[in-house]
Amino acid sequence: MSQSRRSRSKEAPRRRETLGTAIACNLEDAAGHTSPASADHPESQERLKCIVDHLKAVGLWDKCQFLDMPPAVDEGDLQQTHDKEYIASMAATERQSQDDLNQLASSFDSVYLCQGSYRASTSAVTCTRHLAESIVENKMRNGFALVRPPGHHAQKAHANGYCVFNSAASAAEAAFNFGAERILIVDFDVHHGQGTQQIFYEDERILYFSIHRYENGAYWPHLRESNFDFIGEGRGSGFNVNVPLNEVGCDNADYSAVFWSVLWPIANEFNPDLVIISAGFDACIGDPLGGMAVTPAFFGHMVYHLSDFAQGKIMLALEGGYNRNMLPVCVENCVRVLLGEQPTQIPPIGAAKESTIASILNVISVLRKYWRCFDFYSTASAKCKWDRHDTVVEYSPKLSTPTGPIDQRTLLCPEKLVPSPLEKERTTALAYDPLMTRHHNETEHHVECPERITSIYEQLNEGGLVEQCVKLEGRLATEAELELVHDRPHVRRMKRTATLSAAERRREEDNFNSIYFSPDSFDCALRSCGGVLQVNSLLSSSEFSCLVGL
Image: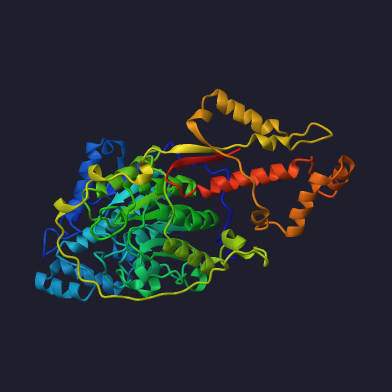
């Protein structure tokens, strides 16, 4: 286990309330980066402008603090993440004709260039680096770099996917310069950030986590190295985490499953000094390129929970997101959380897709030996009846056509979101069987007594809550169900307690630790298990928003 994996301090505060939320924005410089082919290119200045206008309209802009732009980054700063020759070739674009720029852009994948591209890209890096430095130096609590062009596809020596320089990676290097030791980069853009992965692939100081649409390589950027089994090399082994989503339409349920099953435990163990989010919002429902169905509010929830780490030192850098109706609402939800508001409530979520669960298990399988948080997978008894998960690597790349102009008027608007069936009014189910109270201590008053559950039920009843619930009829668990988790001899031994005399029950109690038996103990245990199984059987039901077992 690498020394860089350390335990989180339980003393760390959730928020550093004395500091402010910063905005770093290159709105003016970014205006010079425009597509020579079409004003309706997905990655246009209107993306940034609509965000700024919306934040002003909802009153959040003035609640943030704005970082003064420092001097532009120099070549030394850029060389922390990019090759010297590549930097020089990009700097030369300021003096080249558009024909020469078009020819250069054609040597890359999904990139356009103009004479203003270099200035826009370097100012995006300047903003993100300055923001990271301000947070690490405790000058700001957190912040959002509202910048374009995006950066997470930019590699050491190649522009790629609308990106020229990798702003998030450069921000991480700046944070290291100012004392950070461990940095978590979370990339929830719908496209894999292969540039960030490449830059830090052998670096144990960076835990890079990406959840992205993959479809076994059929989705751009069609790379084999975007799959789950690319986990880093050398000292960086185990620090590169790819969670590929292999079908379209993944929603809050899928992203939540990935967040809590993979991201949260591994981030908790890594214990970063700073969290950088490559904040692409093209996984949002209605995005013309993403094909996913995450709601705008859910992004705020991810930011909220990631703020638990690094004493709240967290920053976002804008990446993708191409529906200009939904993009500013996504950003709004994140900024509200940064400012200290609770995240917007989201409806109860359903079950994750089977393909998402398979990806989660694949990721855990290849990372088990690197992270203690996944050790429980290796402690299961050899006799257990769980299916063993065997990883399967699939890769079927397909050529994709270049993205053309997008008519924003045809895209989904927030006010036109159709409520999910899960948002419909649902009720609470209550499992309670009064016959369970017959399990009692025959010799003395015991803290685990029938009054524990009867007092809860009576309190709920007096408060008028029982009548608001759907009361589930009690049922007995079958012995076959018990044998799913208990040996048959143990089940039969417990069943026999119902036929023992009082003296025999006392002797049987002495064979266990902190156990008492009454004639009805086995029957009550069957009812208790049956109630839990009833609740479990309704977990996937859309009729109930909450299930309670007493």
